[in-house]
Image (cartoon, rainbow, N blue to C red):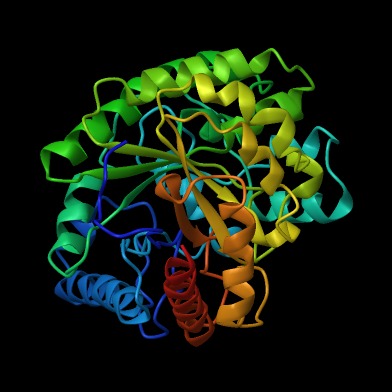
Length: 368
């Protein structure tokens, strides 16, 4: 396992950080080569990234991110998690259609409303690599970070396939698997380009891990493992894999993904991913026991901050959550993070939650 920082129990965050209120620019599907010709947009974007990085560093995080300031304010507050890719890759319809998960009748009324708000798409031809520009976005963030920088690469080839309608007469792809197979080289190329730009810690954000729950077929885990391994093949960096229960305006998509971590996690140990980045705080750390099965060549970054609550946890409460993890996994294979996505929170609340986590990590290190 590659070490990114020389500190026990390193801390970081997952997902998007709240946009500064003054950062109101939207890409609206534009290539940044087009959007950043407008000097005001380019300056505001760089300043927003600098602010997100600074908030994390001042809070005391050991590994920081760019906060995904390039995501527009689409449905769910983070719908751009998928639309950023759909809008820039040839082969996807860039217009918002009905969400196929919601329309399939597999959700409760809450998740139906949330997924309908996100929307869905279909395919118009073979998907190809487009101007996603992750390496260039990384360079902007790298210029503002004084601590190690993690790059979040999402939504992933499996995740993007969830929101695509394959039944429409005009659809080019008729199956989730065929689409995912064509998306693998796109993500692999983006990740390799990030490494060439200097990135050393990449975090794949693909909720495809939940596919066996959604399909009801446990054997689908073999396909998930295959896709992830091909996605990260030849990528010379520390690789983490994060998959959460979703986060739409601070709501988990529980009826879609189920929350059965004990069911889906062990089969995924066959991936060449070295770090699993998992949410625990939102379920009261109820799933921690499954980490007893974590192989000795794998590590975990455990979510100990509940991003779906405005309550700023005390450092002692967060330290107690950390102790729950350390009871089942040796400290040398543990890092700590937030659960998925702070973006729906007020910026002040988000930063104070990060401060609590950093302080809790200092307490936990002192107890080792």
